Image (cartoon, rainbow, N blue to C red; front, side, top):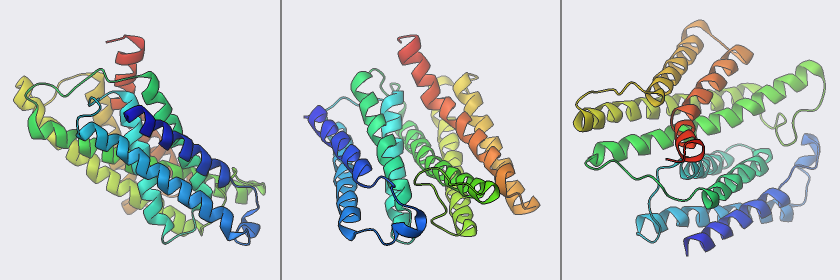
Length: 273
């Protein structure tokens, strides 16, 4: 049952990406026929719902729960798609649709090849569940912030070099509005990451008798938190903007990706544990 729902979500994401792929210049995109956009919107909505059903089947016990890197990526891009849906109600972000659908489809494909292998530690309790939930929420918010950041970088590059931006990532929004959205998402992600680290301290102290275990997951997680803290402080106090702020955002997001998904990838794919 789970694999059928997973395959349906995968196919619908690909369909939405194909129908909604950017083929027009930004000035012409507003004049495109409504039917094409409506079909892409419907396909993505159905894909998102089918994607959500895969998690519901896990909660109902139909599919084994998994804390590996592939399900973490799948849940992350499901959250990114949810953020996109909310924002698209207020801003014209149709150019991002194909990119998000392709990333979500790719994450679903990974779950086929890397099945469940790891469960919650025995006795971890509610603190571990909250740590994991807040951490994945942070992944989703920072993932959305990075996509917006790439969109911002592409728009600034197009203006400076007088050449087209990346397909679908052109300046559909005023740069100041896009910048505000990018760092608003980063701020929310920072709050979720902070909460995740607090719950990590609680369940680690309960399970292992110490608030932090010194391993690469902890090091990358704390390092990413510090980079994001410097980014937000630099923006609010020193007025950082443009490429300097984006470099901090991309660097912190890369470390955050390595902290959980990276460590699980190494254990599951490379070390086969």
